[in-house]
Amino acid sequence: MNKTQLERMDSHMVLSIVNEKLRLECDSLEALLALYELDGGWLGARLAQIGYRYDPHSNQFKAA
Image 1 (tube, rainbow, N blue to C red):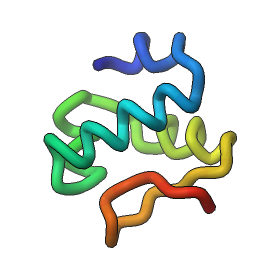
Image 2: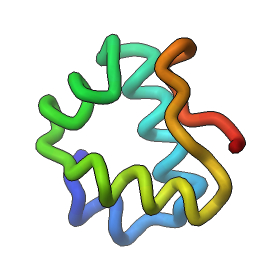
Image 3: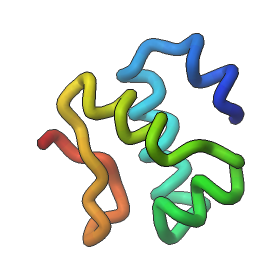
């Protein structure tokens, strides 16, 4: 998974993939960003466009 691949995907697909990676591979958003070398500002803005924001308590992006 890299930013170029994610940029080409529908935002809802990005949401699904990111939440799966957070659930199965990473214990925090920071760990996910570091592991996949993603820009947190870009990812947050992309998912905010469809009404989702990161919830650190559940370690998932949820509807705002």
